[in-house]
Image 1 (cartoon, rainbow, N blue to C red):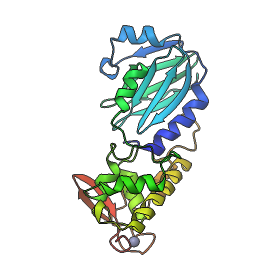
Image 2: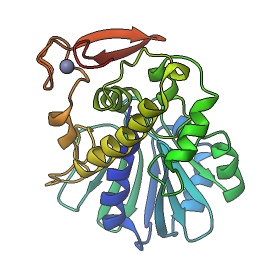
Image 3: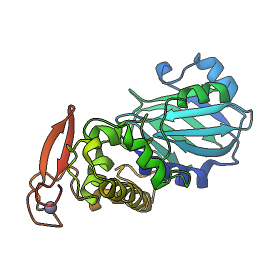
Length: 269
Ligand SMILES: [Zn+2]
C-alpha cells in the first residue's frame, strides 16, 4: 500500500500536470469507487478545475475551484496515471478525469476510493489522524512526548495512523533498520537516546523515500523516471535471506501483529 513518500511523489508529479486545468469530462465505470450517485459526481466535478493537490497521511486531496474536494485513498493495488493524447495504459480504469486531451486515470481501486467531499466532511475524515512526521511542527520534543504514552511493539506503533500519519509496512521496517532498533522492541522500553535516534531515522528515511520517488512500480506518466526508484534502495523490506548491507547477516522475515516485518538480527538491537 502506498505510504507517505509514494503519495508525495504523486502530489508532485500530478500537480505539474493537472493543476489549473479544466475538467472537461468525467467517467465513472465503478459506482462503488465514488461516494455519491454517479450522475451527481459527474455533475459536480465536470467543468471544475483543480486549484491545488494536498497530501494528508496516505490520502491525496484534489481541491476543486467549486470549493468541493476529491479525496483519494489508493489502499492496496490502486494507482493513478496521467495519459497524454497519444498515450494509454492497458488497465481497467474505475474513474477517468479528462482535461482536454490529457486524462487522469484512477486504476485498481478495489479497496481504494475517490470521494467527493466538503471541507467539513474532509475534516471529519482526518480527525483521528496523528501528526505529519515531515511537518516542521513535528519536533523531536513532540515525538518524545507522544512516545511516553506508547505501549506495544515499535513496528505496531510506527504504522498506527492515529500515532503518526503516513507510515506503513515498508517504511516502518526501513526506519527501524536505519535506527538500528528491532521492530519487535517495546516502544516504552526505548531509552531517550534510542527514541531520539528513531525520530532522526523517521526524518531521514522518509526524506530519502520522497527524494527517490517512493516504491510504486507503475510510472505516473509515460517517460516518468522518478517514480519507484526506492524499490532498488530498500535495506530490509522484502529482502529475506539477502545479506544485510551493514553487517552481512541474512535479513529475517517475521510477523508482528500479523504484519510481515523484515529486519537484521545482527545490527538491530
Ligand atoms: Zn545487519
